Image (cartoon, rainbow over all chains, first blue to last red; front, side, top):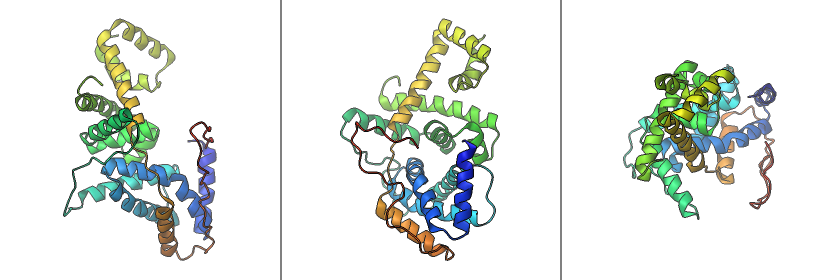
Length: 180
Length: 102
């Protein structure tokens, strides 16, 4: 990401530290939708994702009060979001509804079928594959940013991304009932 | 190039992260090798399906307000300067309207 955005966000974080609530609102509304979408895709349901969303921003701002790692605020948030989602997935559940497939809304039948197939195919992949696909191919983070988030090398992320794309292709083929 | 070499570089090729000469070598191979060409096309197609097919829920204003209130409670140093409107809220746009660049 360009340095202009990083510098602007560094100023917003400084304003937050100085007690400016408006800076918090700006950062929150800038990324709230994309963090909720990411959490929904990883957790497989929106209710859990909405609960996680609050934790993500609280942890992010707590982190901003002290040391904050290098990189963009967005990359920082998504790293926290992934950790929160993993924590949530590890929690024992008294009742788990049909695992992972959220009711899909929409008017266009083809779009709905596509979204259901993608949701089901994603849920069949290992968590790490889902993560790199969502971060690189949907959120368009660079391999370097994702490597920093996951604590891996760039070649390792690129290799995993290729395997994840292949696995997604195969899973979609099976979900779709024909070649993807 | 051999198929194994091409498969190893296919991810970088799709992300256009190779030198121009290497991109051209792989393109040349793909034109002559149906199996590798299928591999590249099918993965690209799956990637496109993923982009179009993922859900993109939006945070409702009440949920956002609740979370912001929670943050304000957690950090007492924040001044009570909250506006009641979202700074980035936009009027509802028709599909024909061009989305503003961010």
